[in-house]
Image 1 (cartoon, helix red, strand yellow):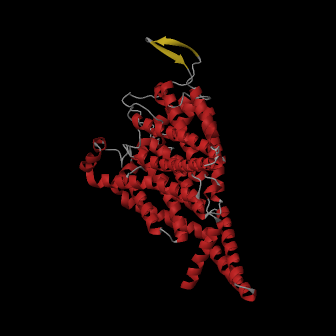
Image 2 (cartoon, rainbow, N blue to C red):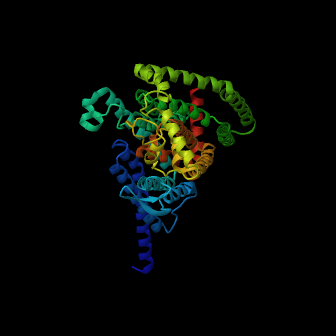
Image 3 (cartoon, one colour):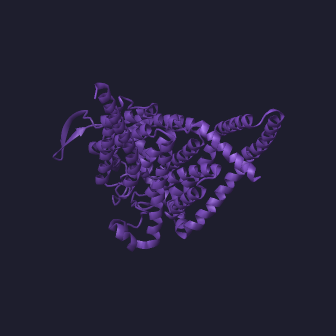
Amino acid sequence: MNTDTRDAGTATGAERARRSLDRFIFASLLALGFLVAAPYGAVDPWWEGAFEASVFALGALWMLEGMLAGGGWVVPEQRLLLPVIALILFAAAQTLALAPAREVAGVLVGASLSADTQETWRFVIKLAALALALALLLRYTSGARRLRALVHAAAGVGFLSAIFGVLRLVGGRETVAFVSGRLAANRDGFAQFINRNHFAFLAEMALGVALGLLIHAARRRRRLPAYAALALTVWTALVLSNSRGGILSMFVALISTALLYTSPAAKEREASESSSAVRREEDETHGGRDAQRSRRGRRRRGWRARAGRDSWVFKGALLASLLVVTLVGVLWVGGEKLAERIEALPTDVAAEGPRWGDRRAEIWRAAWQLFLDHPLTGVGFGAFRAAVPTHHDASGEMSLEQAHNDYLELLASGGIFGAALFAWLIWMIVGRARRSLRSPDSFRRAAAAGAAAGLLAVAAHSLFDFGLHVTANAYVLVMLIAVVCAGARVEGEPRKQAAAASRVRSRAEEGD
């Protein structure tokens, strides 16, 4: 065997190894979404550590795969990580000692921006793992099939959790005790979560994705019953969880999906794509006067259909009907328990009452005062629990760990500087989302609309709760960001799409 043959064999072996690594990394990222959601959403340090170790191990394989490929570790979409990296560096800087340590009650205490450097370092490691997971998803979601797999995985995590939540509710504590004694002893949780609001965060993200899939299936008339069952199951579990923030966020997801997918830019691109395919088909199959007459007829029918379908009156009436039907369904399925929790809402946000300090108004006031005391750099990410007692005017029976408002906690923890980095990240996500919603690929548009609706639902729910502190929810959020921000590599071939559209129209005409 000569040298050239050996070199070719080695190159082929390296390419096979690279492809195997490529597939393994992507499959592991999808499987991680299911695995991390199982143990109570991975709220315990042991499970958080297992998640972070898994992501860092996949990052090492990413380096190896890039070496086998001779480069190509990064893609343009990963520029989205710049504000996240800056936020990680800023959080790490909060732990640096600004002055020599001093002794307080026999304990050496260092002067740093963070009120609890250990918890801030935990935040740094967790955020670094999530950032690396996003980088890997953006790198390895490299085609239309993988985008579909990612979308279905995000919806599947919520669907399986919803099924387990309904079984837990129907089966009672004895059934759950067979799975977990901790869940059996827990009264305020739902599904595998120890807090109903934690499940609601996952469910509203899965519902947004399911709505995007449902929109696409309704247009293509494929898998419509399966996606309808998926959306209905997640919706039912979300209502049965009796999470008030989850109910509000559900309506945000419904409205957002409708408005995002029916935006003028998306419709313009869709109409252009459809008309181009029709013209090509007619030019190939007809000729002369028959083709001209056919084009005029199709143009008139298309104009009438679009005029009725795209009118704001029609859209408003359709959306209003959807919201009314959904509201009736919520009240019917939620029943008396949901009504009682809604009636208790004024008490929860009131500023007066027993000094337990568990009302949201009291917590929000304490968080705001904490921000005013440290407006520029905050008290340290993850250090809210250690710093807030100085402003928490209560009896001491309740210990605050979160602000029950992620935006206030961001201000208290990172100050104006941290909030500015977060705003930079949101600005970059919005820019990528606009490109995805204008894509000529109908599935990418529908998936982006559904994922963006899920993100907006989480943004609304974060005004009242802290579900993103749960590792499973944070990872599913990362999956949705990857769907929204995926590049043009995930689009299907326009030629195949046009051919499929042509076949659908031909079958419809034959039916007429």
